[in-house]
Image (tube, rainbow, N blue to C red):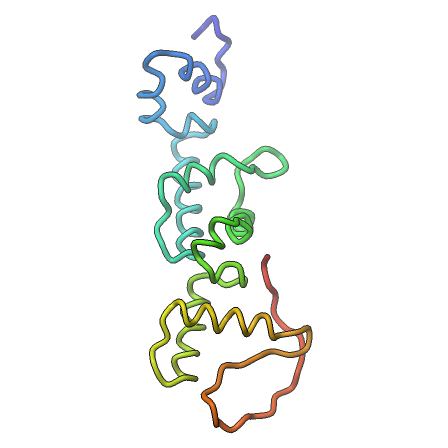
Length: 170
């Protein structure tokens, strides 16, 4: 190692990858793989896990955590911050496919609130598939100055002003 010019944790990880016992060492000290200290790794893993759960409603898997540390990094080569990671998740095609509400710019909390609103509007429980279909129709029907609202047939319509508000992450 001394002759290899190892000066950083990243150098150490790259050196260990060439050694016969390198995989075992890498599993015991995963932070070295990313050139981080143990505390930096723990802090980033906590941040990524929290943000992943906020968006998907599930705990982050080891594979998803590894992906969060790897690609893409921020423009300076450092780790993604919370908002950058959230944006990456919201734009991830696999996440959008697995968690349909993400493609409409909703996190898990907003999705749950949307389903509760639908339950109130329809007067019955709405399953995820029904809610996703209704949400798809609402988003398709809404324009820059109008929106669609789910109502039970025959319900008295209330007038509302049209306008543009909020934002949508894509």
